[in-house]
Image (cartoon, rainbow, N blue to C red; front, side):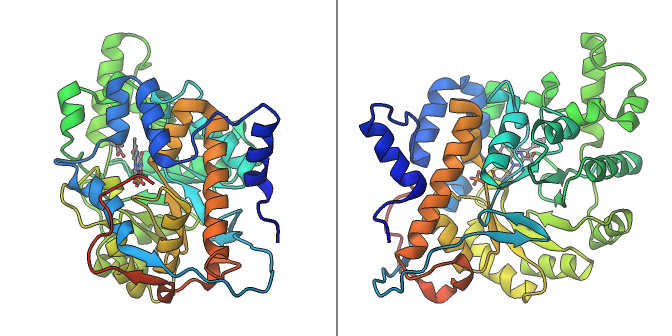
Length: 399
Ligand SMILES: Cc1cc2nc3c(=O)[nH]c(=O)nc-3n(C[C@H](O)[C@H](O)[C@H](O)COP(=O)(O)O)c2cc1C
Ligand SMILES: O=C(O)C(=O)c1ccccc1
């Protein structure tokens, strides 16, 4: 076995050849660099969370409660972290989480993310509130694989239009985000008076939609007053007031795509959604952005995995920063994880190449964690690979 291989090796050789990689290698450094290049209010929007931001911190701190035993006996097999979820092949059990309004980080927005994801064989989950239309994203990286995240509008024809457009543009699954039916109390954004959607950002999928435009009666870009009206209309129908397992049954009747529900933390709700036809659930507390003092998402994972009883895949996000975080979530029963804020920071700092670099780092880090604990693939991980420390080892850290 090579001491170092592939991407990791190339980093050292490039430095020796006088062309060192001048990008961060850890999540904390990315975050600090992003803070220095982004407008303060935009950085605050990405980094911030609900209320005291205890849930944001707790999502990270909980990972430090788990540890692994190094192992040394080995048979020299190569490692393989390739995965397939709901019929979508991916180079690693890692997807890019839907984060809206990427133009606040980079001019190219979700297009740059799409190209980086395609380069790395990683699935991009595109937000409903993307800065670039779902069709433009598909055109930007035709070979890429992507899923569409749906904020279910309080307007049936608009919901159906989004679903039809995503199908038409080749998206491979629908991810219904259930936890953002009202906006969390976010003191940073409130203090800055910052909500990019009111400025018309992140609304490309609405402003390009025939059903939405018919509701407006005038082009939202015609005048500042027209934009204001369009934004108010958007706010009034952004998300359905009721959400029941019946919604999932109905959505399944509209589409042949797999339906995933994102933002599930309660195992009983997971069971009901699965019984109604959900093809997968994503355990997530929205990165601590919705409910202050929310239970750390990782602690919600094992109960939801038990509720799913192996019938459907369980995915996880909220706090994933390193290969060992991915390892921990997979060992606790997740089939794959979503990378959230880190890709937005990488996009802000270095565009497409930043996102690609971040993905390469995460994949290599995960592979090394597996190898150093005697695994050649993530599929053999179980809770027995982990130990829970009686008290947290360390204060919350990003790496
Ligand atoms: C700036 C930002 C925008 C987000 N926008 C969306 C969105 O449009 N749709 C969605 O389902 N989740 C959205 N999320 C939540 C993420 O998909 C994910 O659940 C969260 O970022 C995970 O936490 P982490 O970033 O701390 O790992 C957003 C998160 C952030 C930070
Ligand atoms: O900021 C968010 O976390 C988010 O998902 C969102 C999306 C649309 C409107 C408001 C918040």
